[in-house]
Length: 463
Image (cartoon, rainbow, N blue to C red; front, side, top):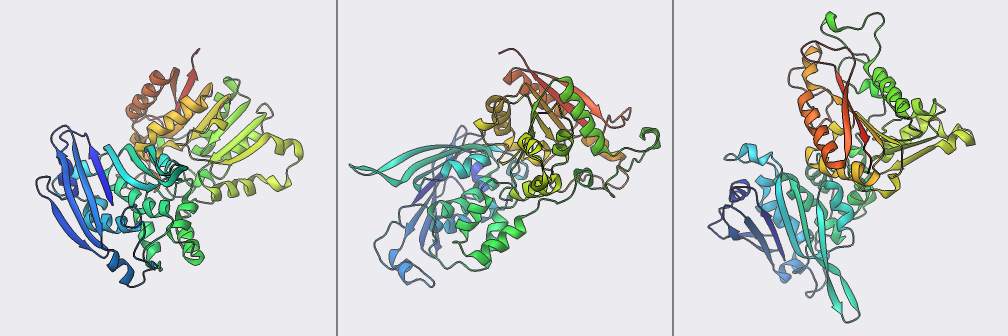
């Protein structure tokens, strides 16, 4: 079985440094199922391709301990699955862990990557890889004159770190296959969580992935899902700053609010509500709704006739339903509310046609490589007339006396933008997608560092 990985990052031969495999030398490695060969069909400044060819020993498969294969003739030597991922994890272990002594910065940088797997069960490819920032090209392989087989020649393209790309493959190839060549025990949970760190918990199909990876062994699946469940069942006030308590602790009295302090989360909600009313919005999307704090505020205002909460986490939606008292709602109020599980990086046509969409303290929870997918799903597919995006201003963090230097406001934040960085991102989106954008501060402003929260208000121009 074969897998190739290509980059056009310049110089492309840096791929050899990241993989710790020299492009000028073919290498072979013994695995539990055969011999893995690593070689480079092309390696120059413009493009570099590495190939992993696994030469399977069918006799070793049948005789190996814990094997579930009972015959010598099968598809395992040709179709990508758990055999290939074992070789992948063995041969590229250091790269998968994101380590590179000679190219440390590059190892942490998203680069253009193309992965080709010539024989792969393809039914779930787009569903599983698209939310992670990949684009899939699938060419089904004919079974006979009557139709196609379950296999396809699959090409994945995306801009990701090499470590993330290898981890995605390590987990999802056996998930696509739906079986493993070895007995699945409790150590598989640890393997899954290590390889899934940073992306599996936020995947809209994490339960499907976990179930298939662990071969539907319910105790293992439940253990893994419970450890993945990192959605906090608390109000956003408590998540704002990862500081001491739900209220903002201002380090500098000069920037404190006059009179009783109003929690920053409350100021955010009030500002968002005011902007929605100013825009005349009636049908509103709350994207990344979490436990439902903004949903509650929207439902309290009769002018918002339709309120649609979306979150990638089923657990978060359950919390929102409990918090909002959905089970006790009257018919009229219940008809105004929709709760939906979906990923913000999915192109979901059912979210099109709304007056406004709100991403309140959400964008910073996405890996930067997923921002183009978010841009497409929100500003191209959903395309509401008004979009409100709030996010922390990292420059202000120095004024929080209980936040250690260099720490983000929450442990799940993937980044926090300066004001200039946020304006650059928002301005680029607006230009590309036909929106105008303006910026507003939220919270007490410091003369040098600005406000703790920054808000971008996108308004759709005439199409």
